[in-house]
Image (cartoon, rainbow, N blue to C red):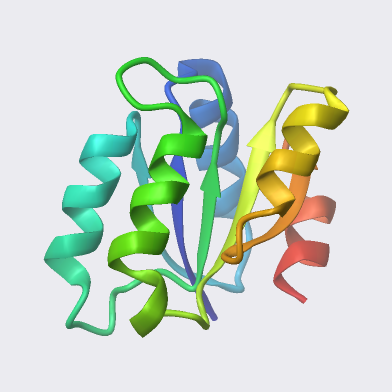
Length: 126
């Protein structure tokens, strides 16, 4: 069973991912935040609990704080105590530059193209 945090400002993508997560039986809990600031606040509030996510999906292009800025802050604050948590960039960007930049972060384990499907999710969890 996995706990998931999705960070994305795209309402359509969030609606789709929400529908997928409701259908699978290997997800224990999931939370959706529409920006990096709210996600960091959420992580801070659950850091010392069993609710800290096992998997974080983060989009690249978001207002206020993009995915790369979120990851920089995540690594500075949370990574040392939560190295079991996997971060996957979930993006529509096909740019090799974005993919390479994302995978250069220690905490990022994968770069996944939107849309997220049940099959992709199952592969990523396993």
